[in-house]
Length: 618
Image 1 (cartoon, rainbow, N blue to C red):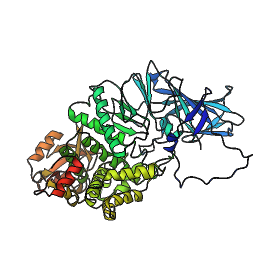
Image 2 (cartoon, rainbow, N blue to C red):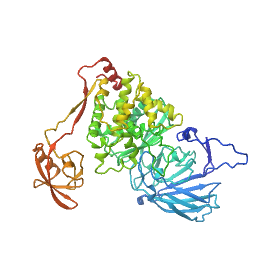
Image 3 (cartoon, rainbow, N blue to C red):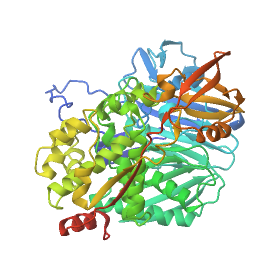
Image 4 (spheres, helix red, strand yellow):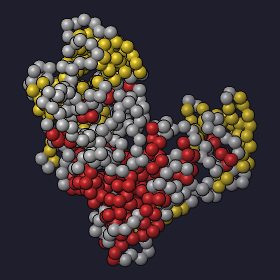
C-alpha cells in the first residue's frame, strides 16, 4: 500500500487493488537493489489541486496546483498530457492553457519558462513547496474534452491537470469548488470529512476519472454487491428508473461472463448533448441527444452505447492490450490490438443486449448483416488490415478525408465482425464447449490478474487454446491480411446462410456519395471502381446541373431513375469556382444487400450450436 499526508494533514491510505490496476508488468519491473541504512529513499511529492469555476459563462476553469516536496528539484517540470486514453489522437490539450503563474509557499513569484509545447519549467530551487495557477478554456463538449458554461461543467483530468515529470505514480487530491449549487459526480473516491474533495492513488487513475459538475439527476442500483450510479445532466425524454433497470441487466450479463467486478463502485455519466462515449476504470462518460430515448429503436441505440462503454471496464481497462497502460501521456501509444479492444467490445455490446433480452436473434443478425454491407462498400478493405488499422489509428481513424473510403477500414466495424466470426469458429471447433467468453476469462485470469498486458500473439494463442487447433490461417487472412471474408463456412455450422442480393443491378449508377448542404449538391467522396471515380468526378465538386437541368439531390435521384446502365449524362460542376462539364457513362449499381437466413435442411448439431449461441431455436 501507499501512504501520503494530504494538504490538511490527513493520512490517506490507498487501496492496494487500485494500484494493481496500473502496476508494472514483470518485464517492466526493475530488479531490487540492496541499499545501505544511510541510503536516501526518494520521497514522492505531495500534490493537490483546487478546481474552481467562479465565472462559468467565460468557459474558463480555474486551477491551483499545490506541490510540497521534501526533495524539491532546482527546476520542476509541469506537463500537460497531449491525449487521453481511449481516444487515440494527439489532442494538444495544452493549447487551452492560459494565465499561468507560480509562487512559493510564502507568496513570492517564481520564474518559469515554456520548454516544450506541453511543459512549463518552474524554478523551484531552494523551495519546499509552491503553487501553480492557470486557467483552461473549456468550451467543447465531447467525451474527451472539457466544457464549462451556465449549465454545467464536464472535464477530463488529462485535459485539465498538470503532472510533474517522472512523478506519475504520486498520489493526488482534487478539490472542486462548484458554481452555483451544483453537485459533483466522479468515479474517484471522496476524502473523508472534506466536501467535494477526492483522491487518486496515482495519475493513471486521476486521468482516468472524468468529472460532471451540475444540477444533475441520479439514480443508483446494486449488482452483486457493488453500487452503480447513473448521473444524467440535461433535460430530455428519458425515464431515469427505466435506464437504471436496463443498465442493471447489462451489468449483470457482463458479470455472468467474468463472475466478478474489478471495481468497488461504478458511475455512468450521461450528458444529453453531443454523442459518443469514453471508457474509464470505474466510470464512463457518454453523450446522446436529449430526445434519443424514444422511439424504441433510438433507445436501443442508447443502450448499445451504454453496453459498449461499460464492457470496456473489462476489455481495455483491465484486460489491456500491450501498449495501453501504464501510459505515455506525451506521445502516441501504438498497438495492433484496437480491433480487439474496440471491435471486440462493440461485438460484446451486441451480445450483452441479446443476452439481456433487449434485441432478438433476428435483430442481432441484422446488425451483423448491416456491418457486412458497410464493409463491402469500402474499397479500403483491400488496402488496410485490421492490425494496420489499429496501429494507424493515431494518424488515420480520427482524421478521415475524402479518400478514406478507398484506403481505410474501421477497426470498430470489421473488428466487430471478425470477433463474431472468431467466436463462431471457436464454438464450432470445440463442439460448443468453448467460446469467446472463455478467451475473455482466460485473459482476465492470466493477464489482468497477473498484472500483464497481452500482445497480438497472446490473443491468437488464447483463441487457439479454446478452439483446440491452430487459427493461423484465420488470423493471417482476416486480421493481418486483406483477404475477402468467406462467411459461409463459418456460419454454416450454426444453420445459417448469408444471402447476397443486388437489388438495384438494373438501375443506372453514378457511384459518387453526395450531400446537400445549404442548397448546394456536393460530392463528399468517390469510391474507387465506380463510374464517377473512373470518369473524373472529384470529391468537393459541386454539381449544379445534369444534361443542362439545374439539379438538387432529389432531382438527380429521380432523373437517374429513368436511365439505364450504359446511358450517358453530362454533369455540370463547379470545381475550384470554375464551371466545367463532365460526360459520364452510367454503370450498374453493384451495391449488395446481405441477410442471414436458415439453411434449407437443419441438422441436430446445427440446431444445438444455434440454440447455445442465441438461447433460442432456429
